[in-house]
Length: 93
Image (cartoon, rainbow, N blue to C red; front, side):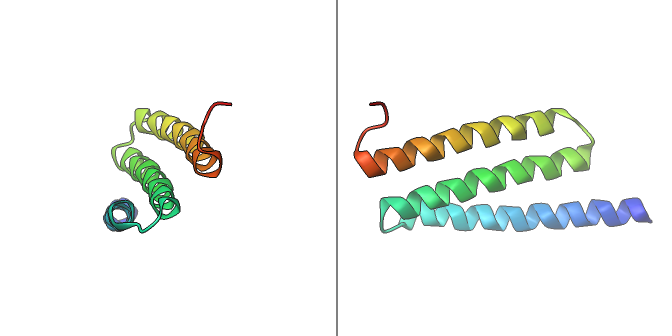
């Protein structure tokens, strides 16, 4: 009984994360400014990371946790690079 509740709750979390990813994609496409698009991109990579974590919990496979860690590191670095580009117009000084 408990396993069934966990499976359904992880499935519900994945559905909600997919909806959040769709909203983030909409913000990336229709964002009126660059800052809105970068915020949508940040939201998208965080939701993708959480989707992989939920999928890893559902399948009980540890490779998804490592992939989620890599996405988190690359996403953080890209957020810093995009913010620096918007502030100064260049990434590398």
